[in-house]
Length: 170
Ligand SMILES: [Fe+2]
Image (cartoon, rainbow, N blue to C red; front, side, top):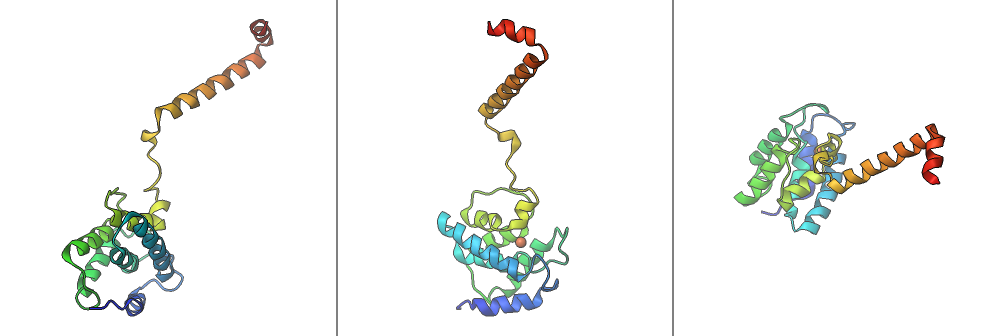
């Protein structure tokens, strides 16, 4: 079965219930698709899966705020339309399903296809899910930061106690 992307997009855009002004509507899907395809190409991810993710991951949102089950609903809709609108082998559909269900869970992945999906979806980064892990800061950063603080402290001390500074300089 040839996947007719324009028809699939139109079908899903018509099903989307939040209107043209939603930040999670087709304009957003298009941006996610563009970024996901670029990332998937770079990392040898599956292009069909990431394109399907783009169009399914937010289509079943019921609001633009907290809607924790919208990814699972999108995956369920994809399962419903599979075979009618598109074909996908089981292993690839499993990637699509997982990516949709967990795209707001804050999980990390080493799979290039799922990673492309999640990294391409801006709301995920807005929620802080991709913030750097502060506990993983390199120890040398801590040393440099503490050394800087020590230097500033010494400077302040010198200003406060000019006599001490003059003794030290001499
Ligand atoms: Fe999204």
